[in-house]
Image (cartoon, rainbow, N blue to C red; front, top):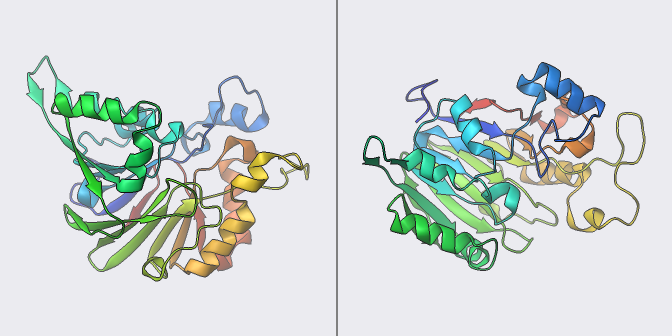
Length: 287
């Protein structure tokens, strides 16, 4: 549970970067240099969010332990995954730090909730299933498999998982106190959300790639595979219009986009009609 706001029901953005964090190791560009100097909202850890009402963590990027520590979150009751990709799963050893303390002879357990189609990939990719089975033998996790649309009560919230268009992807609906939060944390290309996911109070989704940098130069070369398989920022805006949330929050913000925290504040003004905010590490949204 978060020590910053005990008892509060909040969505906490632990990390808002993408496959590459900001600053990116080895990169000396203007954006990374600024992030190294200013830190705070200009730097982005790997993609993860936390729902305080259910002690519920979404995804475990490599640096999730640092993000949890920064936000004073010291216990995770529940963990769900959006998909198997490394930038969302490779920090899974955080479960050892959270739940096993040999010096104090203490042990706690995190419930890991996997939609059936996500778990299918866990059985095939990155040794994920084997590793979580090992954690279960250590008695620091308990694995639960979810069917699509199955409602699970976690703390004071109800959570449902839904398939997305991209193979192995899950979106989530979190309901709490009459409020509805929809999370599509990555891979929203060609996503066609069902009626249960429309008109939420809060929509969280990936930002997508930008056609041009601030200088007007093309970022992704013509014909590159990213253009065919990843959503553009324009496609993200189209989805926001279709889903029609009261508030949209864009995350999974790639260093590749060549924009800083201040630049995204300007974009919020430009796209005000979409009720859009760009997330930053440490952003907290009351639910």
